[in-house]
Length: 448
Ligand SMILES: NC(=O)c1ccc[n+]([C@@H]2O[C@H](COP(=O)([O-])OP(=O)(O)OC[C@H]3O[C@@H](n4cnc5c(N)ncnc54)[C@H](O)[C@@H]3O)[C@@H](O)[C@H]2O)c1
Image (cartoon, rainbow, N blue to C red; front, side, top):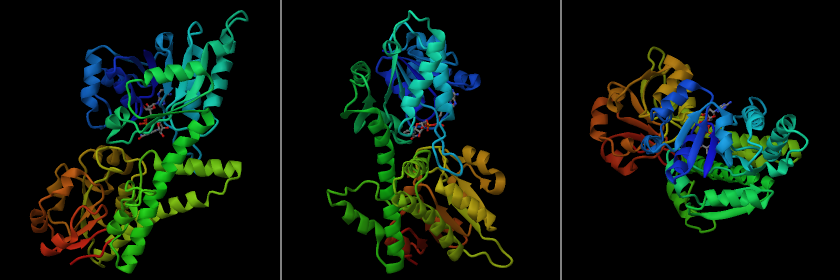
């Protein structure tokens, strides 16, 4: 099939490469020529494991075309996926749909009226958005077409096809989806989307458009709820002397609950959970649904990173004359990504820097993005042990694999005090005690 993908961020470029890998011809529409040139040259612009190889392979095979030109792409495409950002609106938390609507207008101005096209949002959008996209395209098409032309429903249709990939495992998730959700109003669109997804495993859920749109928000909100629940149990455990990871492991053994997304942490972040919980909250407020559960999920998430920052302030207090120097490992919102949107680690380092701490930071992929966002209030290092040298304590904020089996004896010899404050529970407390560390972890007793 020939398809068009609008937007080449974490969702767009992964989807483009995976569909191209199955032999489809894929046009990728962007709006910055310099970025499109880099994509043509094989630079995926984002860090996602395995993506650069897949991009190069499909560029070489000639299956990917990067362009700013809608007319050329839409002339050949039977399916168009909108994959642009839908960030939260400051203040209300509503999904900002400006870009979705802007690209819809351009789709309407360029859609090929002589063949049937399905236009589908892979972007996460509130219920009603795909129908609004339909209205926008219709209004543009009606301006272009003569009265004799085929009816608009013979030219295009909209469908909702939400995306469920996780950053860091985006290619794996796209190739191995748990489910493919198709929300549509007509059988032709369903058949075309089913055909495109034929090579993929996973359940198929065919439903109406509002249900497909809501499935995405319900999924992300429930995942965020599980994470906040785990972090609330961590707060209980810290007060009561329990071990939260053990508690949650046992809780997750109940098949009705399941073991996934019950990890304690410094809070969830990234481009999805925070904004999607906020957007569903805004929708609830608009349509009169009580959203106290969602409000609580967000509040616990805020408490989680603040609780970590408070622990640092307690364990490595600023004295009248000296500011402790903290080594920081990890800034990305989770491992295997360079994404720092809503990253709790960035909130923590910003808070600690403002409070007067000196911070030396290392992250394998996210430092450039952090530098752009918060500048030089912290000091950036290219090597993980360089930040530790001479620091008063080591703070672990992202669960990158390279931290899991770090040389603990080396860390101890480089630190001024043998103090590790671990927001991701990477180490065994009894081993840390044996090695002579004061080890402050999350939802567990401090060992010393
Ligand atoms: N990142 C994820 O893990 C994930 C997972 C599932 C769903 N989603 C949803 O998918 C959508 C995109 O997320 P993302 O993380 O890929 O965002 P992103 O910010 O990484 O990418 C957005 C892309 O849109 C492009 N864009 C912006 N304005 C444009 C325009 N006028 N014309 C063409 N392109 C334009 C940007 O250049 C960028 O390539 C969001 O709604 C998000 O909630 C994201």
